[in-house]
Image (cartoon, rainbow, N blue to C red):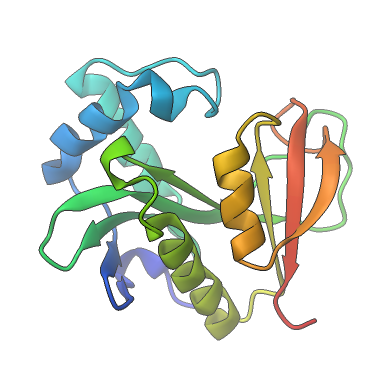
Length: 179
């Protein structure tokens, strides 16, 4: 399987591509907003260009065989957010037979409510099938009903609350790609 770094994904309204250093302003604008980060990691905003560059580097490092973190933009080139498909870290003490592959989305508030998260995630699901992945998981903060609605629109099954990932309690959604 080839590295997905050069893989651009297109939908009727969107282009998903690898983030570049030119995206630092958008990254800073997006992740400096408390409404964006409140359900991501520690919930801390990022307020410096250095933090934004570090996020871009971290996102670029996620590209691998059929995986990555893509910048989502409309066909006019306006950035809207990020869509991810990457190995998900297990919580401490979890013993797993194989790694799980996470799908997720972080959109700028100006892009909320327009179906972009669902459309971008569906492109990743189609890509996952094309490269032979078998199963995807999505995890959300228990209060993140917006992301839970996206997971349901994608046909993902709500498995309930779990502490299997990220050393925290989250809602788990799964999708068998060949089931």
